[in-house]
Image (cartoon, rainbow, N blue to C red; front, side, top):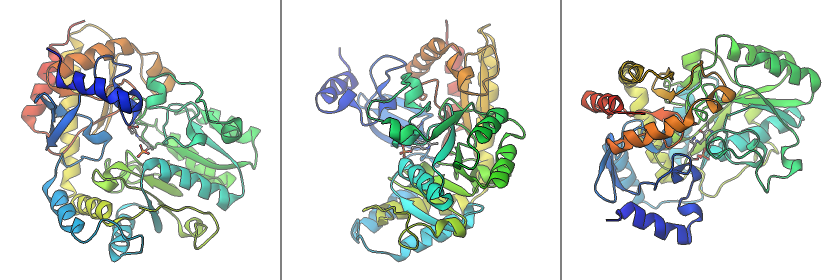
Length: 425
Ligand code: KE4
């Protein structure tokens, strides 16, 4: 009997490239048919065949309080009755900006956009406009959305599908993109020396989540901070994943390193299309209409996305114990997986910080993209399906981080560990 997901996938491929609206959903690396979801509540997603899954994707981050979080849903319903978009300024956008500024360190001003991609490409343009320089440094395996300049040695779907060069990204668009291995300060120093005075920005995921979860080694971010101070380079923290997840103040708060510009996405929108970039006033004032670095968006700051994001961020700000709870639950998952996977007698490492976690079947530490790429990812793919069959939905790629929601219960965690214990080679 063909499942509903298989029927839907067959049909979807007739009208949508690859049958999905974002490549990482396609199960292309793990194999098999992507699961078509019908609804979700709390820690669980339900597929078109009525199967229930404990969700470790949580919409790739936004569902930090779990799916269909009541206060967000109610706020959206109420706001929708007053129109879904004006294309004119509203008080709610000021309230949202003020809330973000009250939570995120070093953000004096913020501009709303509609995706993480928009946030990162706008921040890069701003850094270039502010410094008058063209080149920038990104790190292998980091993903900053799909703007042309970032599609060089990027993580997430590009790593999953081993896409080295992207047709359509011209040499002109990527000629100023310099790359270094994550956690390699010496390589950054070499790029600085070779491109003295030409580098506008260093952009980094302060905790990488697009090659699995990779934590900065001690001194790495601090080293980038002092290089940027010395060279007049704008340090951009891409906190689309880490923002409002690792702490109310994101990675800047958790890791104690300050950025000059910060980009946001995912949690900031409560599941609706929202991104943002913000930072020091002396830089942000270059953004149009105040300055001439042009950036715009029809639905930027639209009331439905704003009220969803505002309601979720306010919940997180007013209840900081949520972060302790997320960390404690992630620690339980970490310890449980460590215990059961050790019985496999196969090498593996578990990377984790806060509620970001990933499992790599690797015989060495995974501290950069090369380490992640040389792990036994075929084994991860089998592990993925073994967990899926047990009702545990992991990200369908070894190059993604897992996201935990506050809604997950201790019995869900136990079920996850018990399911992992049944994984056989
Ligand atoms: P979006 O344009 O997809 O909203 O954000 C791009 C982006 C920017 N920066 C970081 C650190 C990100 O993780 C992302 C998007 N993350 C992927 C998951 N690895 C989104 C999932 C997808 O592409 O469907």
